[in-house]
Length: 246
Image (tube, rainbow, N blue to C red; front, side):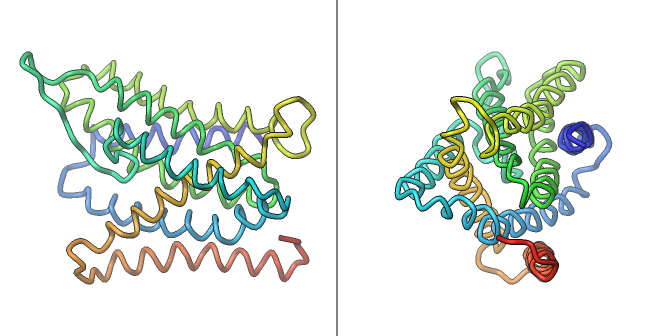
């Protein structure tokens, strides 16, 4: 089962990035809809599953680490420049576009940390779906930036594969960090979870704020947002009706 989940995480990011070779610029509007959907879904998952779970420990420091995660994502975005939100920025130097090392490092770190809460058995499948959907536009933006930076196709594919491997690596590590795992690091799981919640809250709220460009009503984005949140809420109540404890 872990292999299947790892393949889903890898495949969503890698195929999302590879789409840059086939999708025309006019089709990228659909990626914004996916982004709006994933932002609403991730926010709902945080509110319904992750936050109640981490706060159930009654550890007063949990809230501090949520704020740390929120601030850490702000720092990461100084290097990624919002690729997590589907933004595409290319920096040119005197000798042409430069390889975006800061972008790759920050984005890979973000993807790695993003998968750490997957050790939570209660929300594992729901969160897996949210991360997978979220990675599609992020990987597409990464591929676009690499190509526009005059990076060769082969190197672009290698970098996309590296990015796609980060979430499965985080997921595998989370199996050893989970609350039921034995080991020195397992005692810090609540803090790690809280940091990731902060990251999710920053990512999801930024996506939702950006969904209404210039405060203009966009029917399709609004539908995508309510659909993402609605699915998460529906799953929550279906689980509750079957006797699951949250």
